[in-house]
Amino acid sequence: MRKIHQVYIDGHFVTPHGTEIAPLYNPASEQVVGEVRLADEVDARAAVAAAKRALAGYSRTTKRERIALLERLSSAFADRLDDLKTAMTEEYGAVRGIVEGLLPLAPKMFDEAAALLASYEFRQTRGSTTVSMDPLGVAVAITPWNLSAVFVAQKVAGALAAGCTVVVKPSELSALQTQIMTEAFDAADLPPGVVNVVTGRGATVGDTLTSHPDVAKVDFTGSTAVGRQIMRNAADTFKRLTLELGGKSPTVLLDDADIPAAVGAALTSGFLNNGQTCFAGTRILAPESRLDEVVEAIESAMPAFAAGDPTDPATGVGPVVSQAQFDRVQGYIRLGKEEGAHLLTGGEGRPEGLDKGWFVKPTVFTGVRNDMRIAREEIFGPVLVVISYRDDDEAVAIANDTPFGLQAHVFSSDAQRARRVAERLEAGTVLINRIFGDPEAPFGGMKQSGIGRHHHTYGLESYLEPRAITG
Ligand code: NAD
Image (tube, rainbow, N blue to C red):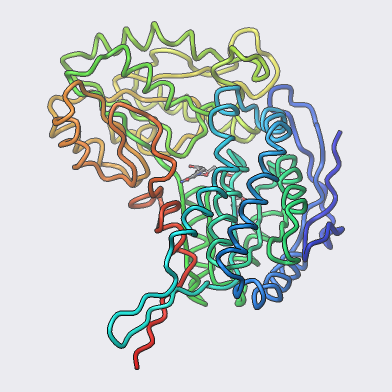
């Protein structure tokens, strides 16, 4: 059992002022695998003070110094990938596909930021005006438990490239991964206070950080409900915000799509990370004229998505992260039946043969109307809905009839037609005949899926403030 009893402030591992000890579970066994001593408000303020002290020196570093630092961070993270992989499976039941496919993006976040920095012009003069892009100041990065390393790396890379210092508040549920990442920060030989890490509750540490007057920017990835609270907290001092929030992404299967291939991709997206991915395609929009084929294709593809032991490389879907999430997802499966949707596969209770662990039966509802709650709310578990439509206009209308706008997918054998539909979809990322975007494209949500973008120059500039000097 791992005991994580320290936070990282001002370049040192220190015992937090906070005294609450929280258990860490393996969701596949429900066994306690570790514990974390949580930071409190005092620790949060100490971390901001350290970041503020470090800011004067760090914000004046040269591009070359920052690039060198980002390169050190990339290799420090790369050195710990195997440990992070083990922790991801142990701590939240990540299956091999996620671990192998997505975790390697974490060190790449630093590489991408370094490459961007190399060609970025922080000062541009036109006529008598010079515009300089200056670091915002102390940034706070708040991350969810899922794919924690990728989000921590993404935010720290952006902040440091811009010349900001940062306080990271990771999720309480991912403390094993956080400990490994913090050791990587420490190994990268950063100036003290440039990166600080305080794991604690949202209601204490999170609230303190997002309302602290010395914090200039909050970069948050998590639920829409918490994003809303952070925006309120930030309002008093007009903090700059990047918010990457929830989703209910549509996967539009046009009537000329290769149905078995498109359904395979749609299910892979929907069940990604055991159904716990912000951009998962959780609403499958099927043409009425080919609905029977879509249903058949789902039925024949489902064995590949059976729930099972996440340490088995053949497993497609692992457990959900916590007892609370298990209960919540069960509630949505019950709700789907009450709302009158047809349960095609899955349903309530644990999958056969799995009597321990927070395993949910991978579930697909058909006969779903887009006004049902199972079609409108983010479930964050392996529960998908199939909604039928008559023509492309209706498909677009249904796809856009959602409070979210993170990602959308279109499948078609006609590239021109797919693009015409894609251009009408209200989402920050629209993908044609694929379910993973370009990792260097700007990423973020429209509508209640968030504000701002990561990656690309948009990501870097979200940590910068333009100053125009004329004369
Ligand atoms: P969550 O919103 O419950 O928690 C996210 C983080 O916010 C945690 O570190 C939590 O401790 C903190 N927090 C909670 N209350 C807070 C407060 N009042 N002030 C400040 N911080 C607070 O989300 P989660 O369960 O960890 O993650 C799942 C959610 O994250 C889903 O909604 C998912 O869609 C979303 N998500 C979005 C993206 C994206 O890129 N858009 C990526 C991954 C996850």
